Amino acid sequence: MAMNTKKGKLFTEINITPLTDIFLVLLIIMMVIAPTFQSVDNNISVPEINSGIAIEQNKAEVAITKEGLMFINGKQINSDQLFEELMAIRNMLEKPEVVVKADSQVKSAEIMKVMNAAQDAEYKKLIVAGEPLSKKEQKQLKDENEIEG
Image 1 (cartoon, one colour):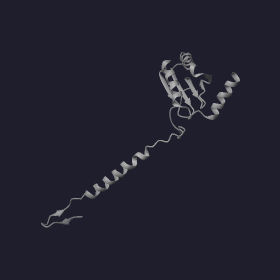
Image 2 (cartoon, helix red, strand yellow):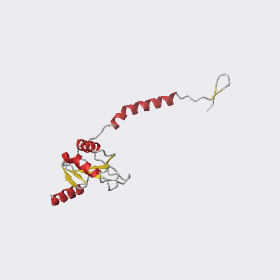
Image 3 (cartoon, one colour):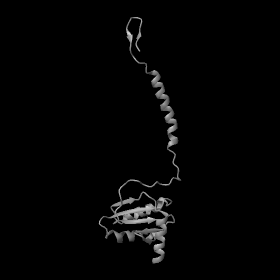
Image 4 (cartoon, one colour):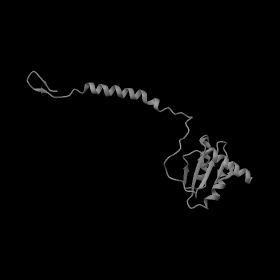
């Protein structure tokens, strides 16, 4: 839209002041609302993973149930024996890697114990499984160890 000025010249510039005001108001609104999107709910359970890399079976797998029971490759152990068991298994593996598969209710301190033991046993890689240990798997591990023990 061209407008004539007093001297006959056309005014062809766009007034961006209202546009700037709108963007400034939107920026302020987003700055006020943004912190509410960052609140973390501690009751969130980790969703199942639909994609990713499959875990090879020839690794040391440490499973931790919600009761705090630890299993290495299906064998129940005490947390005090964790380092010794990981050292014994490490020599039999092609790649010294540990897979931690824990229930979603397991405290992070238990997983840190496994990480520290794996580091002390000189494992090169630690993988934390994306899915929590299912109730069916927990029951199966308990049943297998009750039959053996």
